[in-house]
Image 1: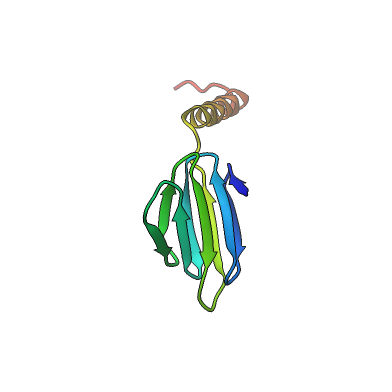
Image 2: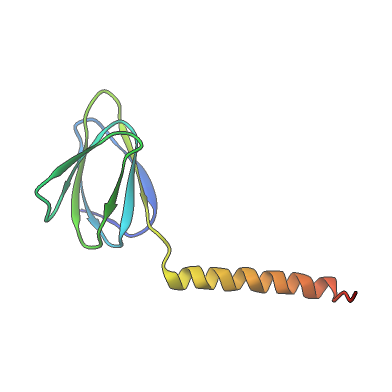
Length: 108
């Protein structure tokens, strides 16, 4: 069973069924052909057309299959965590301060 823990994209061939486990909450986006999605702990199945999205919960299992005349392409997008966003912001601020320091202080 393939585990999704980071942002990734791949293709599903016609008639192929891929079992998956979601390690981190993520968003599924469909490109190319349509995708049939079965989720654990959900009585509904989902028929997603290209451009459709589906939010996935950490720990759930999926079964994805492509049907129709074209292969389906799916992309999983894992959002960055709060602490990662904060560290990225601090790094950008530090780079700006360092650039100002190299340029010297200007007085008016």
